[in-house]
Amino acid sequence: RAVDLPMEVAVTADATTGQLLHHVTVANPLDASVRLSNIAYDWTDDRVIGTAAVSGTLNQTNLYLIEVEPATGAVTVLSESPAVGAYHGSGNSDLAAAGNRYFLLGSHRLYTWDALTGELLSQESIPDLDPTASGESLTHLAYHPLENALYALHKREPDEYNPWGPPFQSEMRLVR
Image (spheres, helix red, strand yellow):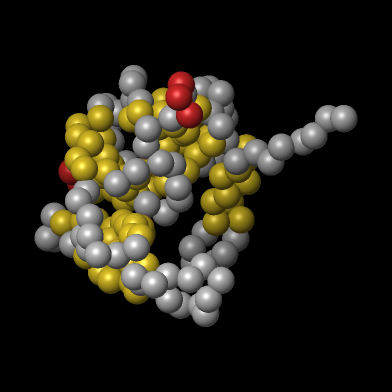
């Protein structure tokens, strides 16, 4: 029996009126398992940039930096080689538009790409912020252009975390 899998779509709406401007299927030139994730808007060039996740060897994900044309769903692959083993969750990226840098948090690393050329500039390990925590993660990355700094939420699980226990056991902290 044939099964239709959901496709990634790009939806563009006017932020003032709420009018739907575009609703298109995102192209998949890399045959990616996740065509588009971690999107960021480049206000300097009116571009949408994100990542495409391609399954690699040894169950590792390869992330490519891509640009998406919102009106058509056309994809331009910006990076020639991927970030290997990077986590492709959602909402873990931001863009320094004036500096042409794209940032992504994934797999306890901070990835930085040149947003024009697609070159992967760095893959810096992020140390444990609280080695006593039973678990921790960083999420919701945001770039501050005046400070030239990155901010994120640090989620810390309590020492006695009970997955079947009461809600809101975790602590959230703002980190720079």
